[in-house]
Image 1 (spheres, one colour):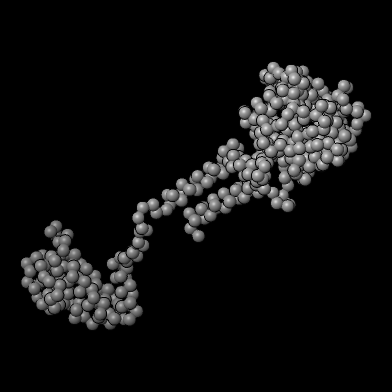
Image 2: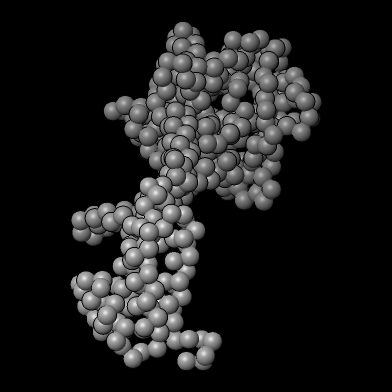
Length: 411
């Protein structure tokens, strides 16, 4: 395999592996592939399908939102935005906060992102409230209910929260947001808060980590009781809880559209995606440079002609093996006649004897000597290779003297 072909094959393999890896992680999963979205449609460990079914079993009325927040019918309900895996546009964010300010209630759940496989776009929403979710600086500690949270203080909470809530580094909270009230905490960190929003009775609850709602953790200790109490804390909602599935890529016509759209968007919004685009661009540039861009393909180049020295060497070996010493001398003599004929003004088609006679009659220096040596070589019947070599040296010397003059005499 040529070096260039091997390089092309390695580049193609690398690009294929990257595309297959990203595609398998981002597109619609199969039966054995984990699904990382905290969605009420998902039965995997990180999904929230169990919470949806628990609310139904309690006689409540959970719903799913498959459109932007503006599509919410009224404000008498609680909207759960659990670790959104698609970003909120500026318009969607305004619609969400305007809906809460008009009297709605939202539960915003943060998550520890691991892009590109598991993004979470909660940070801009929390920043508007002057909050952020950050990783814990100490080991996991037991969560407890804060006084006045409206939750049974004796509840046993098994929440392995990977993040805690803190003030944003440069807080510029929305003026409609009130002071946060702690709901759940550890001895040194806050895990859940509630804050009034707007003048119409709106409220926003923020959870630092989505694991409390997931299928894997909801069944532990009293987690289910605590979560249901948080979601149904406002009596005027009458148990109407809405899960935001629009920002998990789900649409009324099917779930695949949003997933493919996000996969395509990640090609330009993440460094692995940009690396894939860079490799693809370099690949196409190389193909364009190596391809035929105009006209038909060029014909194959003819095989290179062998040098005359190779022909002479092969012929000499052949004559040597055949012990054709006389024939070798005749070939050498014919070659000399062909070389000196233009200088002597004689045609190469003359018989050897006539050629010698006319050459001997020439007044040019060395002509008579060359004619004499030619005659000796053509008449010689050598019995040894040494005789052939001696005659060949004399022919070469006489030819040089005739063509280039006698160097010893300064001619």
